[in-house]
Image 1 (cartoon, rainbow over the protein chains, first blue to last red):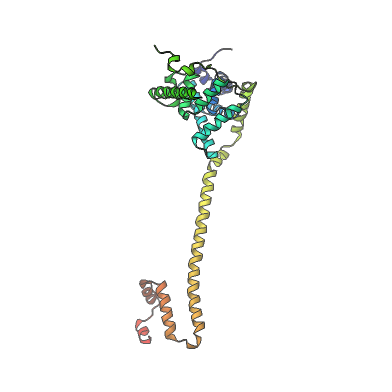
Image 2: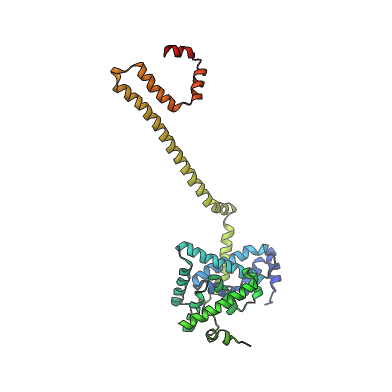
Length: 182
Length: 141
């Protein structure tokens, strides 16, 4: 099967005859990365599935007016991040939970999650990550696990490169401190 | 040059793999589920989409309107109760003093009531509009 570039996929999508074909290819190309990104924020597979499907729906409706100033990959990541944050905020409002309690709830979910494959050390690491402020957690995951460049992250999160570097540095320090104490 | 082991010694010992897994064949069926959702979204008419968005606004408007109507009715009822009680006072006064009742007492009582309901201007307008001769009134009273 030929690999289409992002630009070609967007052009194919804008043609009514090849719209769904192009959309399927885009989903296939990025589904695992996007899923993984959302999953690291939401922890639970069920929540991730809901948010991921909403994300893909928004991608379908938004691709028509996609301006291509940012890359397609960056744009997809941005939608996924925003949808995940919106979901967490809705969860807080729905259950009237303060921020700390949502992360605590996610941490408890982790231990009993049948789709969590990690060993004891990885569980400790995920618990430490969950103690970070929401945005810092996202920055850490994107840099540490996905190795996304700061310039791309800056496009996705609409934050300066300097702020992202500082955020990542602080996140590392906090995690190291936590791993020292447990 | 600092290595990652120097910067984050504990973190560097942990296997940098994703500890989350997906259910079997999750991605196989993903596209078909999303395509079904897209088809469902299209079936919802424009009108229903607008209506669902307006639902909250419509509910708010209706609630506020009901509140205003109830408040208005309540205020009206209270003010009509007041006038009924004023008239009732007059009637009960007459009933209680029927044998000692005279014009002078009635005039005094009505005066009190008129001053509560009519402003000076209204009194003058009443006299003027009804062509009541002031001299007749002063002779009489």
